[in-house]
Image 1 (tube, rainbow, N blue to C red):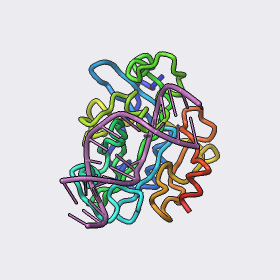
Image 2: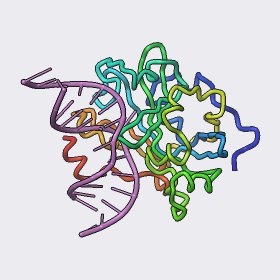
Image 3: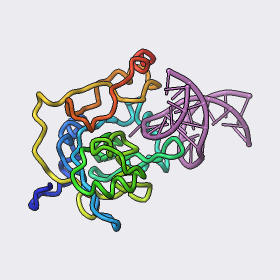
Length: 213
DNA sequence: AGGAAGATCCGCT
DNA sequence: GCGGATCTTCCTG
């Protein structure tokens, strides 16, 4: 359960260097008080995307498009994008001051609204740990879609709650998933996850690691 | 203008 | 492991 006195994270939490925000997001809680019910989960896997210099980022090279506009805005907002013709993925915008960086939320450990998550996923047989495993599954289970793009996470119905940090011995790092096209940047260890947590998505495949070289 | 590939997932093999 | 779903953006001609 979520503590009744849990504090909503403020803008200053996200307005820091992106790698630090990524690491600090592990253990924090994402809550969505939607019309069809409340869902919440603890963040157990994230990836950092560092703006113009990062070949894997949507804002690589300083590209500014309608899709990535939210990344150019203030920290603490939610950047939601649509991909592969059918999936949404969501990010916490970091930095601010015109630095278009963000942290992709890849997996949550479900805490509240598990029945609603199963309904949204359209699969009543899913194990708890599978409900928010993977960035698109996470969005689906949490009821996050394109209209949530640009939402201010520091107030409103979709927020981040403070919670105890994950101790260093339980945090693992790896290259990011699915960015083999990014050349040398594909090898950067900018994925952070909670070691041995069953809600964490797959490790990078050997094939992906090879093609990243 | 048209084609290709993507910060993905699922079902089948 | 592989292909299909089929939107957004980029690159080429």
